Image (cartoon, rainbow, N blue to C red):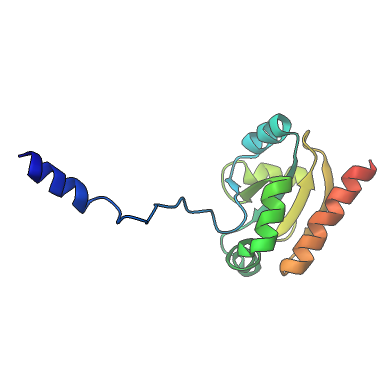
Amino acid sequence: MAAMALLVLMAFSPPKGHTQSVKKPVGIVFIENSWLDALHQAQVKNKYIFVDAYATWCGPCNLLKNTTFKNSKVAAFFNDNFINVAIDMEKGDGPDLARQWGIQAYPTLIVFDANGKPVTGTVGYMGANDLLKFGKMALSKIAAQ
């Protein structure tokens, strides 16, 4: 009986020398559809908020998600410097936030301070280098305040 248990245990154990690795997320890690959660985390962590305001039918929005947001340099920069939140502007709180923020096109990318005050924003698709420039410019505006 003990031999059988040992065989079963060995069958489900990784081979010697192999360790199970924790998968790092690929791309920017976003809070999904929760502005209040993003605000709370920003205040607790003393970080600024990067908002991806999108619509599911929006081609440039989907291109951002599938390319630019998955770029390793972009992801490292935004994950280190911001609380990131992606909000479907046509669901839940999205329509109210779209009116409050004056959003008229997608994707709209906005940086807010930890209190929810807008710092800067842009509209439309951008590649990795341009998004990095946007993020760095937002941080420099914040530092100048």
